[in-house]
Amino acid sequence: MKISIIIPSRLGSTRLPEKPLADILGRSLIMRVYDQASSARLAHEVIIATDHQKIADHVQEHHGRVIMTSPHHQSGTDRIAEVAVSLDSDFIINLQGDEPLINPVQIDELISKMIHQNIAIGTQCSEIQYEDELFDFNVVKVVRDVNDKGLFFSRQAIPANRDLPYREWFGKTKYYRHIGMYAFKRDVLIQLTELPQSTYEKAESLEQLRWMQHGYQIHCFETKHRSIGVDTQDDLDLVRDLVLKGMFR
Image 1 (tube, rainbow, N blue to C red):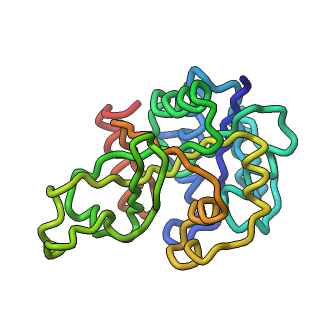
Image 2 (image 1 turned 60 degrees about the vertical axis):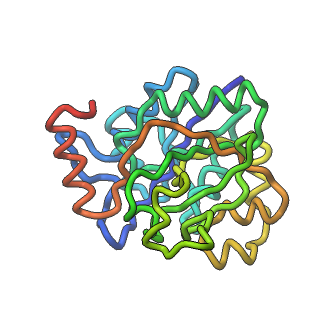
Image 3 (image 1 turned 30 degrees about the vertical axis):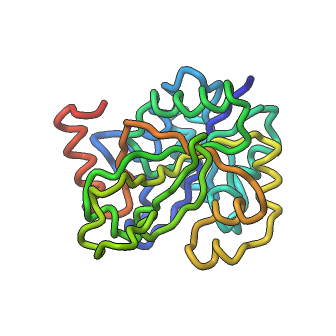
């Protein structure tokens, strides 16, 4: 099985301008993601997919592999699919380009599940540990069946506790947050980009609901690893501090 990790990266960011090139103790954010991905034992190659020459030049300068893509893609999934068409890979890992602390072991966990269970679409989740996460619309929640198949993803807290007020939900049942790293069979990934938007996707602004509403199953595996996505200057400062303290390599 050939496994390719593709990291979509775009220069534009309203909350953190030129985020991929942000410095983290002498190494850019995007190259730190690339370094972590390159340490995954089960992956055969790592590619950055970008629509901007400035990122491409930066990656090449630091000896990374990069492929230019169309600037008109609506999502990172569309961007990696453009690259995947030209690859002979069996599985494609879509690794977010704003998680410089992603653990390579976590990537290998997902790859291993995909290979051994012959799964078409896989992703991960972790148990929610703090009440503020549960009611934060930026934290996507997921409910699953007993075989780890996703039943639904939502920005709302799910499942609901019908007989309790919101403030008492936390701790009464386990809640899980979705971790936005995906693994796809290559052919399935290409099929997904041809699907029209669905009503649930439009309502929640979650593209995985498009796939589910069109009948595709998503396996969602629990992981104990947690990473930090960089969306704001505060996130960036936190990552810099953690790296400086040696809490992450």
